[in-house]
Image 1 (cartoon, rainbow, N blue to C red):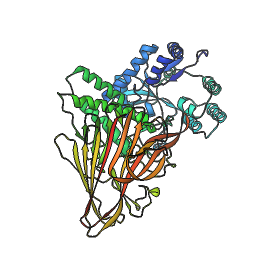
Image 2: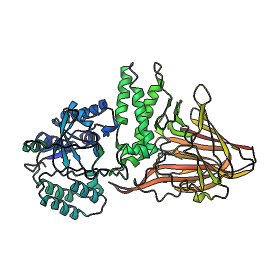
Image 3: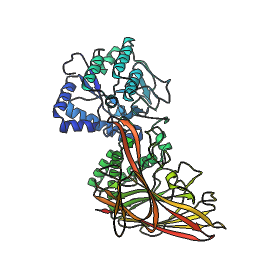
Image 4: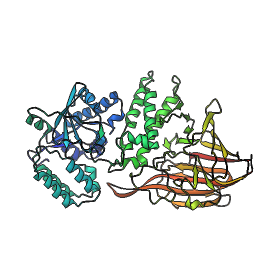
Length: 599
């Protein structure tokens, strides 16, 4: 770019990348600034924290764009008037926001997998509620070629040949969008990068302003709300909001964000507190947690943990304010069922009536959420190597109940096979608070008549949330008029930070502790186990009042990213199980404890 005359490149980089360049790659940053001032690079504005704008309020949308525009102007001397939507999720409501931010143009693909016929090949003017912008559609053909190259379905030479064939057709307008992450995912090297961009630059690039002047009377068109382009995997989702309908984990995660925004902005007193809360809200508004792009950011536990860290910090600030009453009963995931937020000295938990379980378990000294397990929808990577698969799109809650027949083999255990496993994780328990401090809860449900159990049971679960321990008393009562025999299991999926894989644990015994490093294992006659979270210098101890059979498996997703084929850790399933025999009217009580503390 520096040595090429008459060339112009539109560039959209996330602010975190630009901040990293400024801090660690000063020569590259200075070159970028020089190219921007000379007009060879036109920097596109967007959302500051890589937010999907349609998931924000109008005020937050304009704030994110203004922050980005100001950052670019101060550091690169360029006032951007062209927007690129992160994830290419577009809504006509953006037009009013763009006008407020003095942004006149939008660069976006017009290919939507849900509306493939709605495509544009030339720039057009779009109006919404009396406001108008110019939209510059990128080439669907070239976008698709880069995506195909990223999936290693075509070679680099084939990519060049097919791009050249697009050029040879000499379309009236052609804007090629090149996704840099996808180029890396395809394995491009330095020489190939130079060759590709030399081909692009020789086509005769123009600035967006130059394209404007060529149009005597701009054409009119209308781009519908949609999720455009090939930047991320969409599977069968028709729009980004469809993710929150089909995946419980992301519905809960987004609900936690919206609930925090609603609560935090009702606090008006302390200016410093308001400023800190606003910073946390902006950071937690990132859209990377919802996208499976070339980095597979939605599948990276580290990305989600950063989200939960900001949420937990905001929770702690609001709950500690003496002049503010932080609501502890909220329907976070908008499923018409209330969840109870409990913030103690060392632990923060969310008690959920669905499954009579815990939706979160955060250790406050490290702000690490051990309850952030993920079982993504089909198409977002592969989990074929997992011996005991979770149900796709189902939120992984702690202390959920499962029942197997008394003859069941744990090696073959799977919740996906409903005729072999009675899974209570979706059952709504009758949940009530037992004390004034909101630290004890009882959840009660009936299994109904079940062939797996051989009758009907009542399940009563008494949660006691202490300083750094979760205690659970489970009482199983036989409601049938005959004896029943079955295998009772309690699932505890924990997302554990570790410096190595698989996740190891210790079986604690009086004479000798034994370490196990297997990704999947079944142990009998276990009294207690301990896991270590090395990055956070924390240990987790699981203990029961009677010996149990333990099933442990690390749940991972295999997917191709910019780093190649990766196995991304999601959570580790610990399932404690007991064989139970009950006479008619009899009951069995089991006590479990999970302790989280500094090593």
